[in-house]
Length: 384
Image 1 (cartoon, one colour):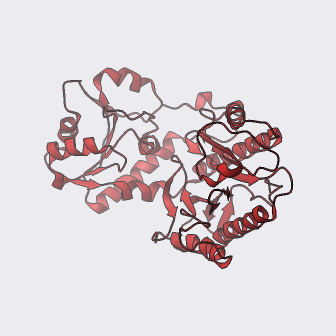
Image 2 (tube, helix red, strand yellow; image 1 turned 180 degrees about the vertical axis):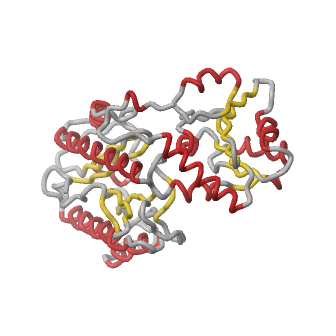
């Protein structure tokens, strides 16, 4: 069952044929690991493998994948709703309100074998499954899922590219609307409206707009702010296209910045470029984080996570989740492969003064890294 008939973007949505290929790869990996079944919850991994979109609640609605079956596990009163939604065609097993869904999963799995769990299943479901099957039959399925999801297909990369370009256009509109006296709430509303106008799934998936000292808070300040002349501006926003994320940050001034802001901005851009230059097929993710920190520490900032400096990882993977594997962080020895997509955002924070985050994303190709969007060129030229 496909939603492609209502599709209105120039890039195609993910097709059922691709989801079937994903399930086949998952089953091969399950067989190699000696796993009998994998239980998907109401997570983005459910969407990844089946196309079914369902918001998590206290009721289990997901899918069990075995070597030869795909079975949706659904509350009885929600069956008719699930049947109307875009998803791969498969069996539906239901449980009633006075029944235990973990027992249904145990019956479907059988008396023997190991059940791998979607790493984003809630803890209370783990406890119920442990009681129904025995904890010795449960294993963490996070790696099985992540190893597939973090290597994007051409169709996934095209959706991410389109979403990034759409959000970059929205950034340009927001930049044009910046003037002394404007409120952060006005810009947030404008950005949401522009995302909707361009056909994003649900407007802005998130939006942070900060002025002045509020830019020193990585994820924004509470309450409304008013832009004053000379303020530094930070805008971080994104959207979804067929569930795939965009996520872009620009930090800029409307007039010539102060010498200190200009200095930190230049260091930030140098660190961002160092991450890109370190992104090579076969390089460990942690090497990219280290490249950013070498630049920052060479300029007398940091070290490590100390501020003024870089207080968090240099980047994160992106796909159906805005934060997913591979993480660009110290200690992550995952080797870069073609198809991996991740942010490049080694923010520099100066406490109680300002912060500069330049965030663009990278896709790894066989020949090396490629920008989804071109980086900023100066504090007054946020668009490459």
